[in-house]
Image (tube, rainbow, N blue to C red; front, top):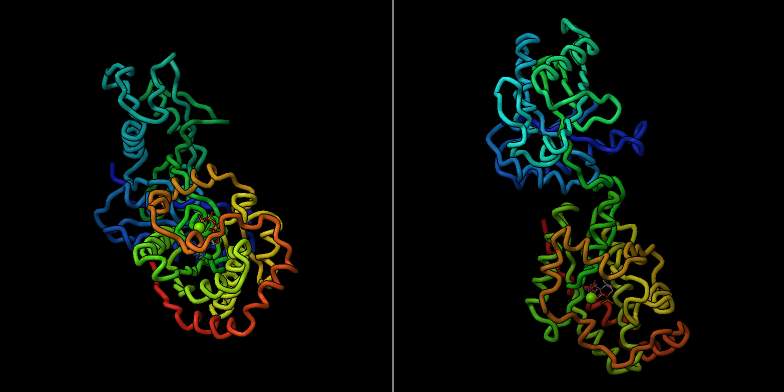
Length: 419
Ligand code: ATP
Ligand code: MG
């Protein structure tokens, strides 16, 4: 069966009034961006208050569904069959063929044994324990001069379906198949399947934030989660050549690209952090290295975020995961920022984070074994309950050099646009 278009469902609770237009426009923009990478010609439009994708050329169904499944704001994707209006009898024939194809139900005239059904999903249950596939017809008339009203179409089509399929029955309250017949000016739409979308809010409706992106498992997931709430992402990666390699940097670029499939293009700032790290290593107590280093990462990230019109920072920190992520350590890290720091993984266990990274396809890249600058200059016994005043006192040892190193680090900013 050929689907000519896709009807896009989105949650409407949060988007009453003026916000609705902002939401829909951002959704359409993100859908167009997602479909750019799919071969074929598509038109994304809003008509009669609903968002559709019209397929104007040959296309690969799975590719389209996969691309749309990454657009935040979409709650459901309905593949639609278009048929010409050539009278009710012809429409009934089209609907019966549609149900046959879509649910592998056998019409009475074919005489086939229903238990031989090869259908998937709910159709697999048909024939088992005499279970019947339940349905309800839902007619919508955008074209009001159609000779029957919606209720008449519902009743008459329901009868035709019951006559055709002995293994279907009506359930108006909780049907397995909610068959929508939408009578429009140019043709009639038939649809019933809803492929779940990712939910969330369209990227662009919630401002922009700067993701501290390392090569690990957590930070790409953190970026994904905040993008899901409608926030556009920029990212910053601190590398420490020659202690960290080009391949480690490439891994971060690759991760940014994977996150960008959901978030849209990301400006990835790559900052050379080596001199600051060496200076901290030389001057500060080694058990405080990680905390002091993280404080400088946050300071630089906040600086770049401010210049990029970001409204917050995002990290992949999770409470208690490592020494630098205890309450005391996070307090010490946070203390250098005035910008809000979003830590969407704060209450997650590692295995919960891994599950999401597998779902969004970043896991395999994240576990590639390249070094990270945090792990190279690491103390054997880092403080787990740093005292901010003591940390501040240690940082005074950097007073003479750090401003210059900070300025130089920012000058190394290499911006890679990842899409
Ligand atoms: P991840 O899996 O994200 O690397 P992690 O468990 O290794 O997390 P840390 O190394 O302590 O945690 O880093 C905590 C957070 O700090 C990361 O999630 C990330 O947001 C940020 N971060 C750490 N290292 C870097 C880096 N080299 N460049 C940019 N951000 C970093
Ligand atoms: Mg890390």
